[in-house]
Length: 261
Image (cartoon, rainbow, N blue to C red; front, side):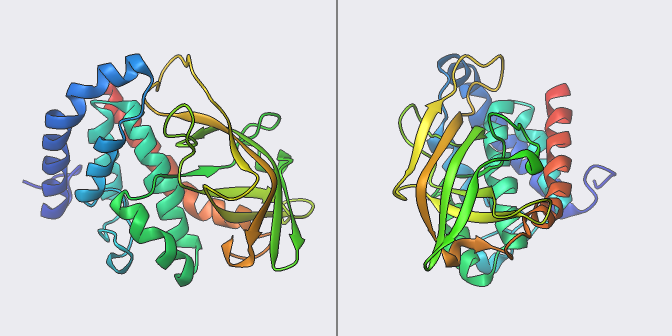
């Protein structure tokens, strides 16, 4: 029966599916991965099989084509059993997948979204910095135009899905970097593991919570980024961030609801 929290039969069926999966597969592993501070990659990829990793993405890119209510339901149900696992899900599905779906072009969507929606690649978003936190306008990482692309230098800190284990980076990231002065001087780039100069600074351990969600420092030393990896326009990243912020904060609130349950 539909209600305020399940406004359509489709939403109700989604909640029942995610709750069943969570009780069967997420809840039993939560304590062990929290204790060992490890990310359950195999379980994460099962979310791709369920269509959850691209829950808000159009079907042409491998997603499920559902709405913000569906994203809220998925985050609430997953976080009720394992908030850390759900945080990694949020970083991938909202901060990277939905973000690129909203702000990228078709070429970028075609290159990354089918693999991200399936779970073939594990992704995140890199904005916070050691000296600026989440203050976008205070960031010091820079990208300068060079030849047929950009050269990225700097570092990001506390990046969810920044590493999948103690030594290996996540696969792809949306990285915010300064390309000029003021609020119109921040741009957004796609950066892949394996790019020369892109390395894992450290996987952060001993957190007071969310230990089964990997958090890392990312280091950029002369990383060459192709021009095709600029997302949106030069200097347009603050607008891109705000377009995605609505659903990011909504799903984060849904996580809080699941944890309270």
